[in-house]
Amino acid sequence: MREGQSGQLEGPLEWVLYPTGETAALYSSLPAGRNLKAWLQDQYCDHDLEQCQDTLLHNAACVGDIDTLRTLLQEERFLRRINEKSVWCSGWLPCSPLRIAATAGHADCVTLLIDFGAQLELVDVKGQTPLFVATENGHLDCVQVLLKEGADPNGSPHNRSSPVYHAARVGRADILQELIRYGADVDIDRQLSCGPGSSPPRALTSLTCTPLYISAAYHNLPCFRLLLQAGANPDYNSWIPVCEANLVRSSPSCLLEAVLRHGCDMQFVQLLIEFGANLNLLRREPTSEEHSRKKVNPEALQVYREAKCLPRTLSSLCRIAVRRVIGKCRLSSISSLPVPDRIIRFLLYEQ
Image (cartoon, rainbow, N blue to C red):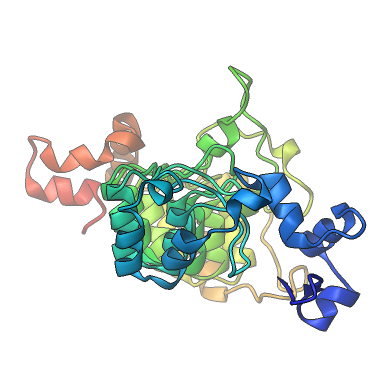
C-alpha cells in the first residue's frame, strides 16, 4: 500500500476493496479525510509531520548509498536524526535508518551508522530490532556486524518472537549458528518470562511458537540439530514446567508428536531420542487420517516404536545427564574439560 499523488491510499485492488489484517486495522483507525502517511507520522514518529519531511538519511540507508550516508552524517542536523523514526518516500512503517539498512541488507551502511552512534536496540512499531529484521530477511553479513557490535541476540522483550525463531523458520543454519555463538536462548523461556516486574512466566499454550517446532514444520534438519546441540529442551523447547492442560486442543502434546504429524524424516525422531526426549509424552501415535495435510513418515514412526520398546544405553543416559548438569548456558565450555578428546566429541554429539 502507498500514498498516491492525490494523497489517497493506493495499492493492489484487493487491499482497497477487501482490506484484511494490518491493512484493515489501519483503515479502521484512520480519521475521515486523513491519509496513511500522516496518520503514521502522528502515531509513531519522533516529530511532527512538518519536522519529518527531510528523509534523505533514511532514503540513503534504504538504497545502500554509503557515500551519501557518510556525507550527510558529517552535518550536525542529520547526525541528530540518526535514531529518528520516520516515514519516508519508500513507504515503510516508521523506523530508524539502522533498521532500514539492516532490512535491506546493506552491511556497510549498518557499520557506518553504528560508528556514528546509531542505537543497536531501537525497535520499530512492531518491537523489531535491527538484528531481528536482518535475521528475518536472511542477511548474514548484517547479522554478523550487529552481533559483533553488541546487539542482543534474543531481540527485544517487546516482541514475543525472536531472531532464533525466524532463522529456524527460514532454514538459515549459518545465521542460527551465529546467534547461538553470541549467546542466544534456543528455548522460549525468555519470551514466556517477559512481563512486568517479577510476574510469573506465561503458560506455554502451543508449541507452534517454538524454534524446534517451526524448524521441524519446514523440515529444516540442520537448524533442528543445531538447536538441540545448543541445549534446547527436546520435549517442549522450554525448561519452564509445562502443564499439558494449558496446551490448546490443536497443539501437539510434545515435540515428538509434532515431528511425526509433519511427516518429518526419521532423522528428526532419532535426534529427539538421542537428546533425551521423553517418549512417554506421546499419548498415542498420530495417523495420516487425522492429519491429512501431512502423511506420517513410516520410517520415522518405526524409529519411535523401536525406541519405545528398548531401554536407552547407559552411555546415552550418561551423556544426557552430564549435559543437563552442565546447563545449556555452559555447553560451550565442554571443549575445555580436562577429559580425553573422544569424550568431548561424544558429549558434543560430534561422533
